[in-house]
Length: 266
Image 1 (spheres, one colour):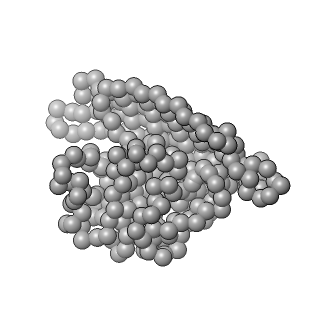
Image 2 (cartoon, rainbow, N blue to C red):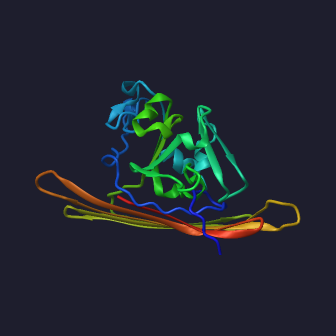
Image 3 (tube, rainbow, N blue to C red):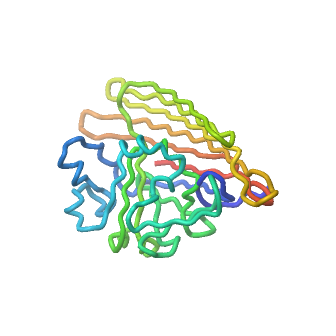
C-alpha cells in the first residue's frame, strides 16, 4: 500500500512525519480577567508575549472556552468564519485540505504547533486535515505582513495551535457517537507531584465516512492521537519540559486508501 508523505485532516490521502525543536518557549496560560478577554495576550505575532493591540497586527484568538463549546471534529471547523481565512477540501474527514489567508496561496500560510512548524514534504502546505482539535487549548491566527517573521512561505499569515497544558490533578473520560458509524473516545490524566508535572491524553475518532462519488460507497476515516508531556521545575526558577504528540490512522478515498502519521517532539 502506497504511503505518501503529505498533510493533516480526517479523510484524505496524505502522510506526514515531522521532528523538530520549538521556535520559542511554551505559550502563556489562559487568563480570565476582562482585560485579557477583550485584549488577549499574543505570542505568535512578535515571538514574545504582548497584548493584541501592542502587536499592531491583525490577529484572532480562539481560546479553550470557544473550542469546548464548538466541539469541532477537525481544525477546519474552527477556522470557518474567521476573518481573512478561507479553505477548500476534496471531501469529508481526512480529505486533502488547503487554507488560504488573505487570498495568498495555500503554501503561504504557516502552521505551527507549540512553535514547531508542520509542513508537507511534497505539497509545501500543511496537513490540516489530520490534526485533532481535542488536543489543543488555544489557537492564534496572525494575518498579513507579521508572517514575515517566519519566512517567505508565511506571506499570507501564520496559524499556531497550542497543545493542552493542564497541571491540575484530574482524570477524565468522554465517549460520543453519531451518524455514519461515527464515534469518538477521549481520555486523559494530568497532575503534579512536588515540582514534577505530567500529562497524558489519548483520542480516537472513527467514521464510516460519506459517499464521495455516486455508486462508489462510503469512504471511512480513522484517527488515533496521543499527547504526552513531562515537566520539571527547579529551585533556580528554571523549567524543563518534554512534549510528544503522535497522530496516525488511515483514510479512504475513491481508488484506494492510505496510512498517515504525524509526529511532534519538542
